[in-house]
Length: 121
Image (cartoon, rainbow, N blue to C red; front, side, top):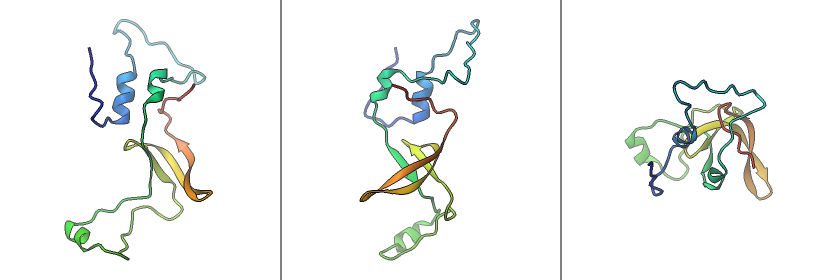
């Protein structure tokens, strides 16, 4: 019996992989048509995840980090206008862009990973 420590972070892909049921070695897997995407168990729909939009990254030395202060500018590896990476619990799932939603920023999804399960009701 598998047990899960709810106090540790899980990688999204690990969770999705553990939810998939592998058929027996002598049983052929049923073919899925494009109209039959993989569905998550209703139990999994209630698990909270952290959605982030990654603007870019920079590799700097510890000395450069120590020298950072107000008004410091660190160039990132993302080109202006390039779609940003959407991540769920640290795993990339697609591309998006920042939009304004009233008084806050929002996320406009441009594309999602083809192997991301459909979260249907």
